[in-house]
Image 1 (cartoon, one colour):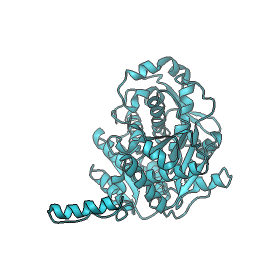
Image 2: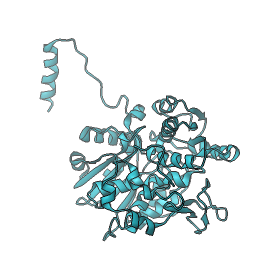
Image 3: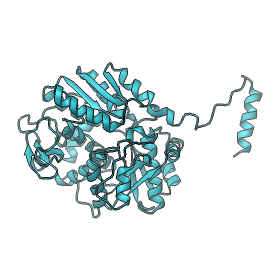
Image 4: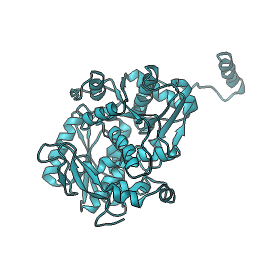
Amino acid sequence: MDKKGRFFSGLVCRECGRKYPPAAIHVCEYDFGPLEVAYDYEKIAKAVSREKLAARPETMWRFRELLPVAGDPTVGEQVGYTPLVKCDRLARALGAKTVYVKNDTVNYPTLSFKDRVVSVALSRAREMGFHVVACASTGNLANSVAANAAAAGLKSYVLIPADLEAGKVLGSLIFGTNVVAITGAYDQVNRLCSEIANKYGWGFVNVNLRPYYAEGSKSMGFEMVEQLGWRFPDNVVVPMASGSLLTKIHKSFNELVKVGLMKEPRAPVKIHGAQASGCSPISTAFKEGKDFYKPVQHPRTIAKSLAIGTPADGYYAIQAVKQTDGGCEDVSDEEIVEGIRLLASTEGIFSETAGGVTVACAKKLVQTGKIGKHESVVLCITGHGLKTQEAVTGKCGQPRTISPKLSEFEKIYEEDFMNK
């Protein structure tokens, strides 16, 4: 890769289009619009082809020209290229023709899609000379920053709401990071992180490094298209917290066309957003026909990884859904648990609560006809269920205890047989 010219030229404001150097900044100084990475798509088109990509290792970095790192990646080199699973049994349960799961429950190293964004952010942080990295997190991001920083020899701090699931807290502490629990909602944690970033000059992956960090999510979209045999799906269902993952998957499809890896589809891929009813600012605004959401002051949902009441990319997520003729749904805690159990019992995939949201919302989108019963759909499952065991504990039945006698086992077997 060209270290001087690289494949991105800097940053650009999503609102006014003003250009900025590739520094650790995230908002426009004129209108406070969010900044994003500006790429040289003509240069990228000359550098990539399907054949070149196929010859590279099966990681997210096979698409490195479309990720904002100037040199070779130095953090998370093995991240990505998770399985795209064809789910026929789940499809029958949802009433859809063709269902795939993009299974980031097995992403390396911390079992969530956040490993994608963190590998980009920390690789870029190293290039920019940061020695301390940090984040505000609802759990998965904290785990990934802690693990990847440890592997990279970087000092790290992760700030989290104090009521996070025990598995996610332990999943950060084990890596030796500095875990700081805040008595407040995620939005309060995030505000504090902005103050810390300004005072100490650390590399906060989702504050001053956010333009680079967010680009890592595109790799999920790139991969699913290649894994489908270089075909776009008809639909994608994406869980929404800040809304960033949805907007970046939308961007990834457009970029594949811009650099000549794909032809413009006859109809855009319909992108659908999924939220928990206890914190659904984006879904609620979309259903009400509004472009701007009303912040949720006190999120109440078991899907804590999605409990962001003031989503930074909420407006842009709504626009992406509208532009693609997609839809938004939200589901109750009971429906989330049922979604987790349905995916596990039909396909053997144990997802965290965000995955339950995605599955349950997909079911509603099929029932309402927003996802056609003869269309294909990819469900983005973003984290492993071992991280949120509390959500399903006591809701999956109990083991039946017997003495070590064949006769007692036979009683259970006969009971099961009679109940079929």
